[in-house]
Image: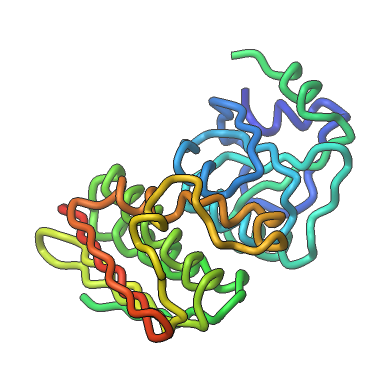
Length: 107
Length: 136
């Protein structure tokens, strides 16, 4: 699935400006421990996290994660969106919880 | 090539810059993506360790013909028990830091897994010096 296909679902809303949404999502990872994401995360993952500070963008950028998904309408900090724009990391908000987000994907 | 980055205590907005910058440099040099990933992870964890656990410090990187050498040096307070600090899951991070998703006790083990050479020395109240090398 590509990011723009995910965004066709009205439950998912892009919060920042990125040049391309054509990136493929190859796996879904839900984790709030940054070191664990650093150790296990892979290029192409969609990363679900409740963390909202700007360092999530550093992690996503280093691992070339396809997008960050914030569940349950959690809002990111302003700094996070600025850094996400600088690093071309899409940040997506959804009212869904982790289980319901996962159900939207099939690989 | 030598690169140097200063990291301040609890400054999470700049922690991550060294790893991000060096990743770009290594990509431009055409280094293998698996090596870049290992170097990026190790440098990121070292940056976060300095921001979380020290009074501030710096990361010095040497990109050499056959290896990437990373030195993380901070101004203390030092590590009392290095064997314990190396244990996965052990952490002295505060509750507030853990709530941010840091301090899971995986930083040093993650760095070691990414390294071909690894050494850490520390003097209580003075400094911690981490030195690693990743073969290219």
